[in-house]
Length: 157
Image 1 (cartoon, one colour):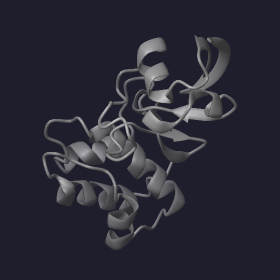
Image 2 (image 1 turned 180 degrees about the horizontal axis):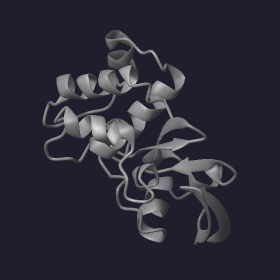
Image 3 (image 1 turned 180 degrees about the vertical axis):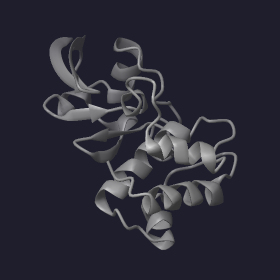
Image 4 (image 1 turned 45 degrees about the vertical axis):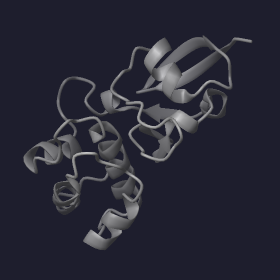
């Protein structure tokens, strides 16, 4: 049964009609047309669908939309609202930390959340913090380099 839910997505209050048990991922993509967040495994194992909820990385494919109704949600689109890339997005580009790009939005969102918690993250902290983010192309060394570069520049918001 559909109900009306208000969500704070990328700084904008949005009203949606959706069953509260639907995944946040499906609501973002199907109801709000925010397709930057990717469907990977649908089981919370690959982290391609990672978004920030109240500043913390969350796998949107296993998050019920009703559980985030009163929380601040940021998607990959929300990092560059006026077309200017977020410093983490710039770091990923500079480090050539993407190939097919499917995992990239989730990796970037996870990295932003990681540096928010650990602004001076070491390489070991980054590897541990990004554990569970799966890249089919194997760009892990470049992902770590991008996050380290962003950390050195003080990117943590």
